[in-house]
Image (cartoon, rainbow, N blue to C red; front, side):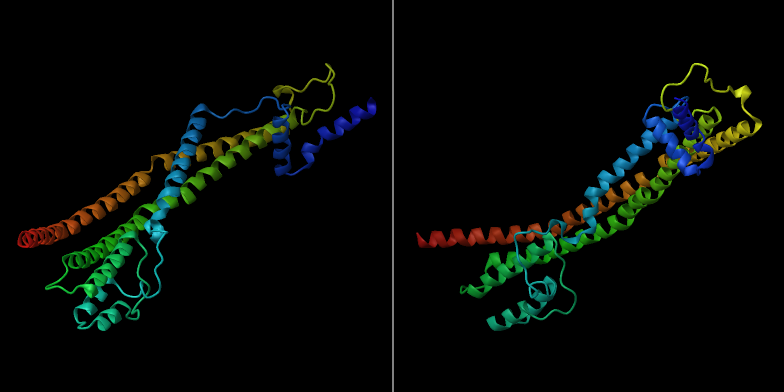
Amino acid sequence: MDNFKAFGSSLSNIGSQITPFASRTFQFTKEQLGQAEDKTQLPPDYIDLEKRVDALKQVHQKMLTVTSQYSHEPYDYPTNIRENFTDLGRTVSEKVQLLSTATTPAEAQAALTAPPTAKPQPKTFSHAIARASLASSQLLHQQHTGAGEDPLATALEKYALVSERLGEARLAQDAQIQSRYLAGWSTTLNTNLMFATRARKNVEKARLTLDSVKSRAKGNTWKIGPTSPREEHPTTEELSPEAQEEIEKAEDDFVTQTEEAVSIMKNVLDTPEPLRNLAELIAAQLEYHKKSVEILSELAPTIEGLQVEQEANYRKSRESAS
């Protein structure tokens, strides 16, 4: 039994001979095993700030998981279509310009397959519709044998030009969102909230250090086996001046780290930047949809006119036939 007590006593002295990191580790382990006494409690206001910061971090992670798609150009590009290098070689506007000078089917086909003059065209849903509409228009033009132009072919060509403008408007929206929203929220998540996390870790380190110092000063660094009722720990009044000074120093550091963490967390929570960035996101979306309405409003009367004219011609041909 004496040997066992001696072994336990030797472990009790380890705390004064190890590094601060090891002291914190010992203290943390004791707390996990339920052997810690008088664990220093953090203020309720501090804990509330931690919960609010955690919630803000989760908000940023959830939103960025979805909105980061704005930095991925083909996020609305159909996965079931296959476009080759020739399809993506020139803009629809360039192809329409080349087609306007074509006088034979061969020249028209050459205009559609003209070699690229710049980087491949964007892969967005609207750009894909534009390319499909123009190709469809030319298929109808090539097979049209009647007088005048095929109204559906004409409408598809106009729709192709407008769809390309819609695609460019979407890309402009995405660029604004990337610079005015995604960049800001990413900075808040990866910088501001990271600083808050680091400050909170410093508080936890200071608390563990403080409690390990208190525990070591009171002689209960580690417990192995049953303790005798006569093995009482010294009270605060019985602590040596050196031990009291070490405790006071650890307390001061704990208070300093806590105050700094509170200041950083309040700054993260109170900054208007996230809401300002969200307003920029909405503004970019609004501008895009307004532009879309404007572009489509220009096209709709033209397509409606072609449709009305075709229906009138259709009725005339039916009347003549009867």
